[in-house]
Length: 369
Image 1 (cartoon, rainbow, N blue to C red):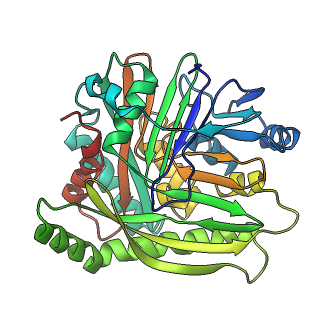
Image 2 (image 1 turned 180 degrees about the vertical axis):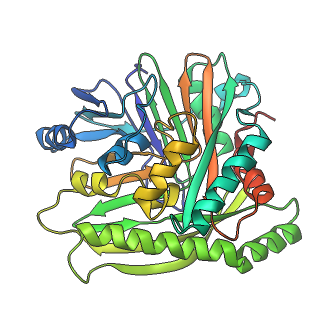
């Protein structure tokens, strides 16, 4: 594979295709200073081609008018157009020899608690109702990016995984969360809120799942984000067309259970698919409520830019169908260094012990055990 390759893989519970493309015919990279109109024009100029790429968390926040630090070592936006794509099957036998060091947190527990308390203060003051606070974990590997992605994918057979490689960086997104699908003028989003570990036995599994379903804090958080995304869809959809189709459904992953919602609407005729994606970035499930104020506070609390993590990665098919994930469970690889972001939504009902532990649980399936 060339170092300009892109891979997408879904599972039986998602509609993502298992596809790959290489040798792009057109490429665009943007910084925070670049207008989103450049991306809109790039998409228009390549209609009928296979288009794939990402919008970083920072680029979405910048569009909200929030001052934020530029992502380091990777573009704020990066898209490629390809003449064609093909089916992708990973070669599992090659993955047995891929190794990486344990992912280790870069924030002390005391610093986490300090920031957690600041967030609770802001919630009590009425600044936000919910805020998604994240922190990075660091690992190292000698593996080449494609082998690492295949190995990570074996451990995380999620519905919305993506791999993008360039000369100086690679992105490994093993995301369980769909952000936006747009097909035939219908726009859908499936926000995830609510997480608990899987059990070691079937009985323990059922017990933990029931705990998640009965958890009032997690339920309130999910409903809050569904409401936020319903409002986000309302800005780009025809009046009266937005509907909540599922308010609390279950997703089973290798190491955790999640709850999620499903919201859908009919796109306004004058708004293109890429304009809708830009309008809704960053996703409500990984920022907070209200979104702009949450993003302002995140930029004060988090020490480093998130980059692609909690941004969005996906593809546009030649027929115009658009499929993008929320880039959680996402690793940025710069040479030997791997950075994995983890986090969770904090509300008035949260406690720091549960939130810190939940963030580390989300990294469990990435540890090389």
